[in-house]
Image 1 (tube, rainbow, N blue to C red):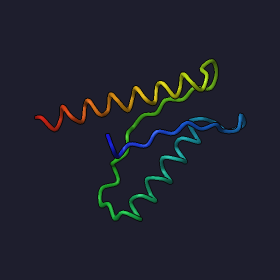
Image 2: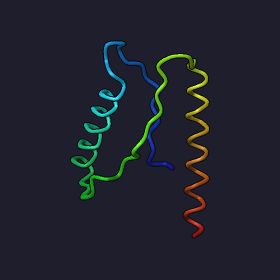
Image 3: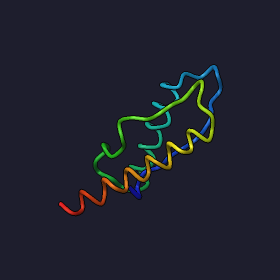
Length: 81
């Protein structure tokens, strides 16, 4: 979907992945609502993928590309309905 954002980033080992994601998603949602004047605050996806050990950058980049393709397929199917 054109309104999704995919990030590949690293965080410090001392930082909890779930705490970081909660902070990132919460703050970005508040900024988007404020700047774009959205009335509904429930516009972000509930999930995320995180790899802390074992996957290399190329694997994660591939996941992001494939997820974007899947989102585009789902978007085109929902438009047909």
